[in-house]
Image (cartoon, rainbow, N blue to C red; front, side, top):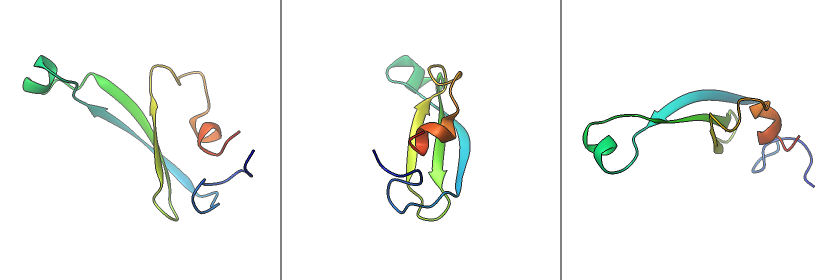
Length: 68
């Protein structure tokens, strides 16, 4: 198991953003953004991980990013 910190640079300075993306087919054609994610990114090196917003509601997203 790795030490807590960014998997790339070891920094403990991270941020989060919520993003929505289109799917495929009709949702893409009509620009329906039904896929929602939380992006956790390292403020030092920029490494990012996407987490499905629906499946990670009960978890602390930053703990997942840092391997907690």
